[in-house]
Length: 404
Image (cartoon, rainbow, N blue to C red; front, top):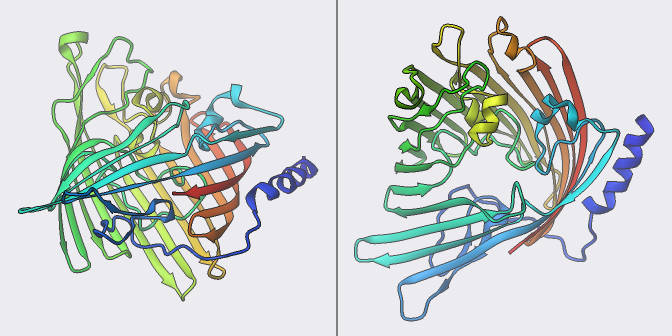
């Protein structure tokens, strides 16, 4: 097995490292920086670099962007899918003696407008990609006017400042994420940002003991977030989880809540220490960003106990990483993240369920120029079930990304 891993790593290196005659680092700016009319726009990480152009005779500027990304995987133990899903280890049918997979499904395209009016600038953003099934699927669709945002976008509960730069889509397991439809108000004052949102309510109900029970959402999810510059952020949410008496005869409700914090501390000019912590109850669908039907079987927000009561599931997640830039063109990230949930161990159906998952990674990324990056990443997943059984898996991912 040791020699197989070395052979697979050597085979992936040509994919991860591509020759180029000109080498230039990305001019990375803070995530969320708005497009500046008539000037090159640099919104978020490198893959959103693009320039605007004006529609003649109008006050509207338009920007197209996105990227083409090839991901090449070698799985030593378990097939973890097209976007590295550590919880795939829960399914024994995903075991493998060694598997290579190539995909371009993460590729995405986006479209942004900015229109100047007598009352301020109106902005829109539309983006989609091809995960999980090769079809064009919506990621973002929202508009902004002044401090207001309306539409589908990242939940106000999540942060970016403490997330490492890795090749795996979606970041490490256990970092709060999601793109609900929402209405958000954001206030900025110097380095301080405060935001509050009402978001589309939904939750993942465990299928264990809940046959015939329908969920319903009577109230929107309320979130608040505070961020200081690009160094610290803290957020909170509260939501109602309830069942639908009209359709299933079960009338139960409980409360979900959570707090998330992230930290980014420079350690000299080239290295940044990053940390993440999320704790709460009823957060499973935020910490394992998949459809509710899938999350219900893996990381449920709630379950129905033996007495028919609706109970929220407590969960905790932590992560640390170091991002290091070797020079203007080469960078690395190394880190680990852990997610655990408190499923009842006295209910037989939960014995094979997830107790905790640890996900670790190390990578090397080359910014060939402003439109091309490539890299290689080693990933390790380790899960433990409620019954005490455990599995681990190793994966190598190599990626080539063309930005436009």
